[in-house]
Length: 404
Ligand SMILES: Cc1cc2nc3c(=O)[nH]c(=O)nc-3n(C[C@H](O)[C@H](O)[C@H](O)COP(=O)(O)OP(=O)(O)OC[C@H]3O[C@@H](n4cnc5c(N)ncnc54)[C@H](O)[C@@H]3O)c2cc1C
Image (cartoon, rainbow, N blue to C red; front, side, top):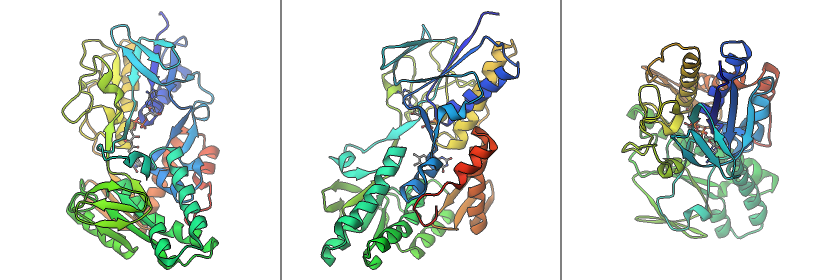
């Protein structure tokens, strides 16, 4: 059999899951030994986004960032660091920013999503985010620096400097809002700053937090956030940010640090690619095998970018990666392809230390048990990509934060 080349573009949840399943299939002889498995991604590490809010609040960056060579250690996978800038679909070839061309028989495109700032002027430059390891570390450093810089400022200045405004009350914004005060307090303590000057505000354009979840979950989350001392501004939009002031449509707030979690869109590269037709919601239209509908077989799209029922979650992206790998193995071994069935996914959202909301199907659990479950979910994920000792080490890695 002639050697097949499988190229995976993007080493996120979909990419590494597909890569590992294919690599295992090769290692254990389920696909021919001469199959080439290549993963091309713009970074040489995988980012575990669910832990980013913890890195921003003092946990070790190891919890959210894993080198690809560690993940694929012991497997025959070619790892290439390159940003893809174009894909020639009929030729099944991807073009990298380095000038290299990656031709293959099977291509998995899983480029994820990216933040959007809705054209709010200068927001990108003036706000912080934690949707990359660099963003999370930068935010953590900002929190530390602001206490150092303002420890001797006037009371009026401190009230503005130590006011952290989070925009967007989806899961990421809520998770950060629940954790940031504790971290800010611990940093304040090291600089002998009065912690009563710290305040956290969460701004949301919807009339409730966690707007995509059932109402009773939103209400419990709001109650919990209020207990933690978070100021909630619902039904409000950020329209402008200046260095010391945040402008909502009907009010001004004094704050230096704005953290943006409100906008998320599918990677804009898809828009520029030929043969990746987009659905109305901006995701790539895919068929029942998660292949693009451009008339050329064997180009798959998974994860956040694929227009499937539960896209936008890590669990879905992992499920897609597994599904695509399974079909590629079937195709190589001349078995018929299986059809994609969307899989309903649960949520587990920590809000502050020792407390979380777990929602799976009809079951909802609030409090410490849900929080422990979330710890297990994180550990289970590390175990799915790393050997036991490395997964446990990463799970237990500590930073300088109070709950790390
Ligand atoms: C802060 C945050 C917290 C989250 N928390 C949760 C959670 O708790 N639970 C949950 O279920 N979901 C969560 N999510 C959503 C989840 O992380 C995404 O659904 C998931 O990452 C999607 O996986 P993916 O494989 O599609 O893309 P990603 O995981 O984003 O991977 C995309 C990959 O493509 C690479 N890439 C991008 N552009 C290029 C290019 N041009 N060339 C080459 N490579 C490129 C990237 O570097 C990355 O490796 C969170 C998301 C964020 C941002």
